Image (cartoon, rainbow, N blue to C red; front, side):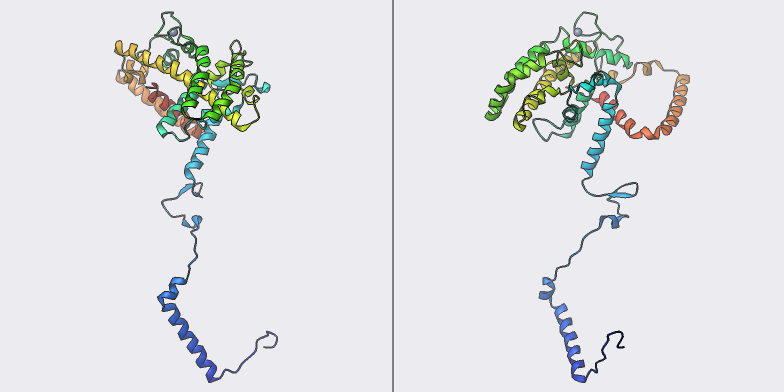
Length: 353
Ligand SMILES: [Zn+2]
């Protein structure tokens, strides 16, 4: 006992009674509501302990705690980024990338719709806008040349419907078609004044001052020839949606940089609203006159031609082999899901009205 440092005490009757009394008092205290109310229970929920709970999201058996939307957004952004940067359709923009002409960070932020006048837009509008920006960047807006190439029903030639020049309505033609009410250079010039007016109407006078300080520099930059898009001036970079690094060099001040970006954004929107949207309205009017319905434009030309049972059978077989190869392509699953989303969006939002 000595080794264990335990002392043996002879307890007498009095001590024994005292302990019994203390126990009683303790019990009374615990039963007393007023005292109970002063007791704080500290406990926390450990998310990973709730593995069987239906309301949690898992990825490879790991629980995804909170901020799910944020997390999903990041994943989507990463997929978009990957799709965009690896797209062959952007090869022309990367051709002279070593010259560091473009600010890709700002370009991607813009394309993914993170810079805007209104911070929170409703989801549908946001998706549409992003879809437009991506298609425009890839020169894949649904012009007649693109629709014809995709075998869209009732589109039997790639020519521009608005001018009688028998020219293919390519992405470029759409922007310079003589049927356009405004030229892109005109829109650029006017945008400076329109943006100034907009700022004034919204009592953003400090920004008006900054705008006046940089408006000539802005115009000077966009009138210079593009080093990347050969044979065009830099306004075509804005038409396309790529942010030139020279805009960043205009100022080191945060507010000034932000205003230049906003002006750029304003011009981009103006180009869309004054050329692309009127173009869509006009083509829609022409198509309606000719009895082409929107539903026709969702179908493929070939689908209409396949009427016999035999062909349907063949299609089934093709589809099955397609499904098999899809399974093999599991690695590319995420990317292809996004692509199909884009295609879906292209079909759904082929009009911007
Ligand atoms: Zn035309």
